Amino acid sequence: MTSFGSCRHGAAKLFMLKNPAGSEIEAVSITDYGATVVAIRTKDKHGNYGDIVCGFDSANDYETQSPYFGCIVGRYANRISDATFTLDGRTIKVTKNDPPNMLHGGAEGFDKKLWRMLDASDTQLRLEYVSADGEEGFPGELTVTATYRLEPNCLRLHIEATTKAKTVVNLTNHSYFNLEGHGEGTILQHELQIEAGSFTPINEVSIPLGAIRPVEGTNFDFSAPTPIGDRIDRGDTDDQLKNGLGYDHNFCLRGGLVSSARRVATLRAPMSGRVMEVHTNQPGIQFYSGNFLDGTLVGKGGKVYPYRGALCLEPQLFPNSPNQIDFPSCILEPADTYIHDIAYHFAHG
Image (cartoon, rainbow, N blue to C red):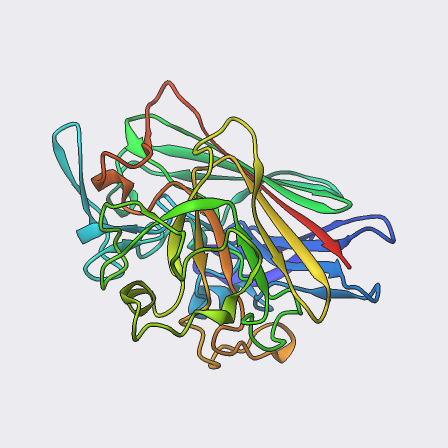
């Protein structure tokens, strides 16, 4: 554990999880600011290790300029339309930080909080955050624990949440990946496969229309490994690529919500040979192709993050579920526990 600078809530710390020499993952760095993954060092096809996630060198940089690099977002990941929903007949108004909508929990979501370290070892870190009743407008005091566990070829994240009053919850990790190495060009040549037969189309402000549309025969069909750049710039003929400025959509995973994590996405970088599989128990995954990166952010070690220089694969419930009764439920009752398992498996070849 080392110092990671300061933020408005106090001094942040940086924790490093390490593997034995020769493992697929050499090390993972995590800060208690936002329960954020700062670095993941994995092996390429030549046996060399490199960092494959975007990030910054201090908590202050995350606080002042991060577009959700590596953090846990909540209390509700993704968007809620008009920053309003109804719960048991009561109108709930949450923070409108992405006008006219709420995005990733509001103006100061879980990504901008100092989490409390519960325990730490060479291969595991457990963090906790208690969100007050009414924080960003959400009802119910919510207690969240996030456990990162490092294995030789896998980084696992187990999230649990309990509430003192009925509320809505949708939590995920928001890491930006470039398997060639962070700051090493774009992700347009990466090959992506998503285990989804449908997706949720969006309007001009990225809110799902309520429909669930098959991916077959569309620019959103990643049923087989497909270079991300093949169809991403067809916004002149595809209203969905136009609305998302590329890919920024929820994919409806086969099997829906399940009891244990299964493989839902596979990403491969052609130059480095790195392969990442994403596993989750959730029913959806948001694929975001780095459309708002513009080359102005300077990250770790002076690396510049160009347009579409990284991507996010965010396991989740569906966006705007509080306002869509036909989407998987995001409601958490006091008697229940929200559980989200994510695993990132790495290989090379």
